Amino acid sequence: MEALNFDPSKAVEEALKFGQKLAAGAETLFKLDPVHYGATDKEEVYREDKLVLYRFKRKGAPKCKTPLLIVYALVNRPYMTDLQADRSLVKNLLDLGQEIYLIDWGYPDRSDRYTTLSDYINGYIDRCVDAVSARHGSEPINILGICQGGAFSLCYSALHPEKVKNLITMVTPVDFHTDDNMLAHWTRSMDVDLFVDTLGNVPADLMNYCYLTLKPYRLNFQKYVGMVDILDNKTELENFLRMEQWIFDSPDQAGECFRQFIKDFYQGNKLLKGEVELDGARVDLKSIRMPVLNIYAEQDHLVPPSASKPLKGAVGTRDYTELAFKGGHIGIYVSGRAQREVPPAVHNWLMQRS
Image (cartoon, rainbow, N blue to C red):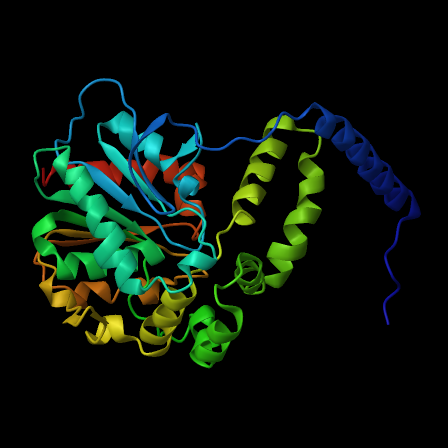
């Protein structure tokens, strides 16, 4: 058995450095301003129940005449798309010449317990599309759907194709039964009826716990150990805290919509099979004949590429484009690479079809 290679002097040196970092961190924390998010000025243009539809303000006329509506997921807050000035999908798209609108779903409460999947897709999204279209000559608009919001946008575009000019999906699940989708494996055996009947709305803290346990070491321990290295850097610490605020600022999930989404999408894989029904109408992805841009992240642990790429064979359009991003589910919005690659790709694709 080999002797343990241990140098007491180096251990003492590392302990001293660690203590110095902690001391510097305490000083930095006292100097921190309140962490803000949402870097881009916006105005409210429509409101209904908890939902608010925002238009992001821009200087000058847009280069793309057709407005772009961002449909985010229900499970997180949409300001991830506009986290801070140097990490903002919204700001970069505005600077390139897009006219941007975004749906903020708000925070459901007990009064939303029986809000259904159709209420969100055929109700809220449809009325937001109409509100945006009415401000731009009542013409079809462009939609960018993100994650669960992408699945909603696929359903909407299949049921209301006359209202959508171009469709972009980003880190959007289409096949919910791929072997490498751990979240899908978990939910497939869930008794969702018992779950919702017992809890009503699904608590945000419970949802967050499930996401954190997908990568327990990295998300619960490693990142906080690594935080010690940035405690003396005010800018990096603010960035870290801003991200933490977003992670834990999650809304509860409306119970009935959650039940339907788990049953039809995760358990039944009905989106890919063409078996989802909303208000008696079947969601047939072959009805999506407008141009489609599908963007997925190669290291996505929530929506692996294998879950997104089947969209190519599922839609009816002849104008289908796929873009692979070298990053993860969150990095596709906030990483430096994302700022350089994703907004220009989206803008150029839309301009070619404007």
